Amino acid sequence: MTGSSDKTQQPKRRFHIPTAEELEKRRVEAEQLLSNTNIQIDMSTSILKPQHPVDNTPSEPTSNGTNGAQPTTTTATAASPTPTRAPSTPTKQARAYTQMVQVNELQRGNPLLSSIRNVRWTYSNTIIPDFEVGRSSCILYLSIKYHRLHPEYISQRIEALGRSYTTRVLLVYMDTDDSKVPLREINRVALLGDMTLLLAWSLDEAGRYVETLKAYEHKQPDIIRERVEDTYVGRLNSFLTSIRSVNKTDVLTLASNFKSMDKVACATVEELAMCPGIGELKAQRIYKAFNDPFVLPLNE
Image (cartoon, rainbow, N blue to C red; front, side, top):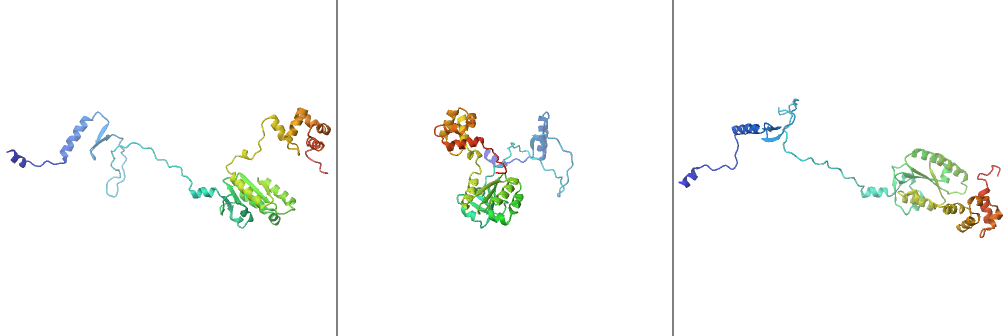
């Protein structure tokens, strides 16, 4: 009997599909249970979700006849931080470009380029100066012979340069012996154009200037500044050794005999020559350093 009754029973369904009456019943039961809470039932998905303010603004109908409001998704996702873009690192090509001296196309064929051996350089048609040795450093190149033929050239180049660079160098190649008059003109133009004037008596020397400015691009000025000891003896050595043929031993001799700089400045040639190691010629040089006028009269 049992076996026959089992055969007559209908097979159980693996999935139960609720009818409309069951869904309505469940909704009513859920509303009764949750009537005291701020939760409502979304019948479109049959999932409970927090109640939000209702927007009564009518939306425009879409092409299929329904309004533009999309069904609200009920899946709660944790707020994730906005991904930040990693700082872009320069490529190898960009780094290599910045490590080179940028040479203006106008300098193509300049014999100075063959003297730049210790740093890499490349031509560029986007820079205004003749050489760009850093982000804020540039060089304008000029020879004395070319300045005699085109005296207005350097003024126009400085004017076109504007204020684009902080370190501005005017490199002048002294390729002629009679350079007193043109050098005076160039010095005036460099002063008015806020340029630092550097003189080179050979192409190799000019090339070394370009190499050094590029090598010291990120260095502090203290590296090439003279170091003076912050003591009385150190300042005394720095001052007196600037006189020709006076060495540190002579400074110690003068300090031990005269006891102060004021007495050294007021000493006569005979008094200075009486110090051991200081002869007549050296005494005259020390005396002139303290007594000769800084500006000579115009008739001399």
